[in-house]
Image (cartoon, rainbow, N blue to C red):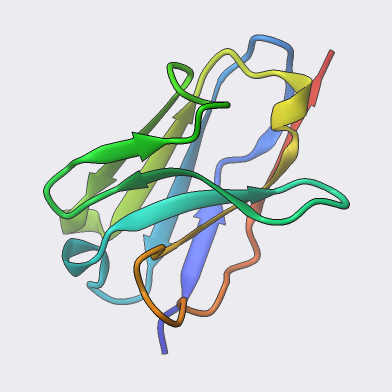
Amino acid sequence: QVQLVESGGGLVQFGGSLRLSCSASRDIFSIYTVGWYRQAPGKQRELVASISTRGHTVYAESVEGRFTISRDDAKNTVYLQLNGLKPEDTAVYFCNAPERVEPWPWGQGTQVTVSS
């Protein structure tokens, strides 16, 4: 069973930065496109960034130019650099594989809170 662990969240002020990490219990990231999702209170989970096995990245319009996704397959870790944070970025952030028919079991996520 795959276990995903997200970390790096916290409370930051408007315009601040954070670096999120997603690690896996097995070597799975090297064979799948990996994505970062977020879920704000009362809203559906949304995909905000993804990175393919070849390093091709895709971003949601709302984060384009501010967030950067990267991967280190040797460490089974995917990162999300969050810059220029806004209050509307406040959410719990998760990672998973957007192209899988059945997602891996969701981790606990990591809370990002941006104060205005």
